[in-house]
Length: 140
Length: 140
DNA sequence: TTAAGTGCAAATCATTTGCACGGAC
DNA sequence: GTCCGTGCAAATGATTTGCACTTAA
Image (cartoon, rainbow over all chains, first blue to last red; front, side, top):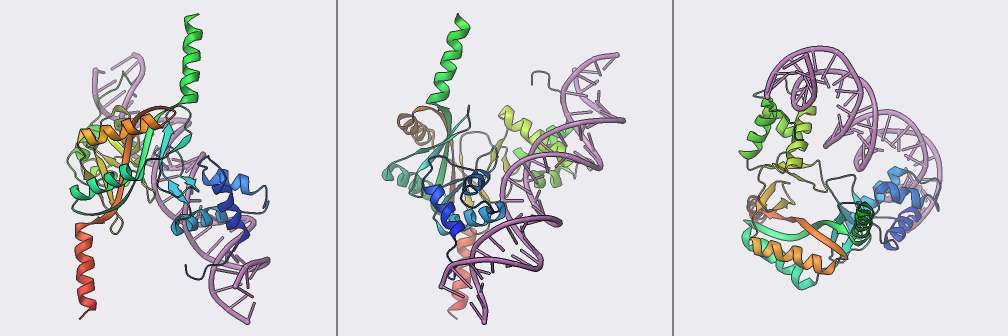
């Protein structure tokens, strides 16, 4: 990894990740970056997403449903998956809170805890509002 | 789901999950249950693992590396993945702690948080010990 | 020049599914 | 007898990989 070369493709992928609030799948990244590099291949996208994740310049998010997602935001934060629409949202948790969770786990685990990821499940505001509307309609 | 029939295969799968501390992949479950049901198919194992998860009688664990894993322990608890050997361990967190995390998230999310899963990363005791030994050897 | 990166297509891996048959109720 | 569950094999979807060609350094 010491001898890594610059590549426009990787730069474009990183740039896209950094400027979107979505948490795109590899395929979405592919479709987007293809606007700038019409010949880029899905394989290259995967290779670079994994490279970025390994270098700590992106985060790979695994959910039980569907493929992995990627996030260009690398400061410690959590994610919320909307059970209704499937969108993934960022959720910032203050350092103190987050740190105390890792420490708690470390005290209770026979070994060493280094980090953690938390995935929250719920319903986003948009979906709540929609649900409300459909209930109103039914009561008419 | 109301009209669900008993099946020996599903019972055997559930029983296996309940009696192992490992967090087996579908394939591991398949290989084990096959000792009792030599003709069981991998498809059946997947179907039943998903059924059990949907009924809340098992938990599906997604990690960024490798396929999903299953856990017959369904009371609220967390998991630790060993960065060295890849094993998945249980980690009990008291109700209070766990509850307060969901509440914190709910206060900071534009919508409703219902639950969460946390995956810890670290090094298990076994791997720490091995690492120590190999360091000792090098210093000789 | 030369090693790393790319595009393409084929391969791999995990998981799901269609269908004919068997078993629970 | 009716439907749900099973076994099998084929299909699907996500991701990785081998290889000849490009390109950054």
